[in-house]
Image (cartoon, rainbow, N blue to C red):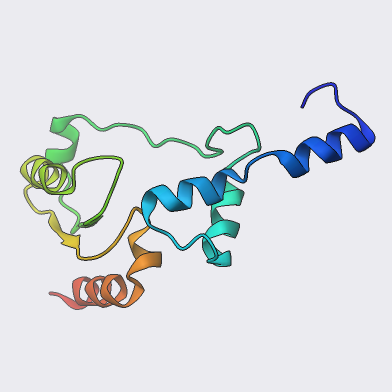
Length: 128
């Protein structure tokens, strides 16, 4: 859309597919869920690239050295990676890690299964 101005740009914007609606279908979101669409649009910068900072990758030694109680919740219907092997791999690298698969959840587990995720987090925080 670079180079387009005025009415031409507005027309092109209206014809452009809503990437968040397309992505929503792929991860199991209801395309009409306005909260999801708003969140997703905040992450996209209009160029079809994700607009976020990627976290650093820790080595196995760094993960193994973490002694802080840590909870990892992975969505059952995650599409970016295989949930069970990922959970097993993380738990092998972090001996004190608590983790589980969130049943019925898609990529944004806290949005798709908020009651389950919230209850599990509260249980984790209440533990000795």
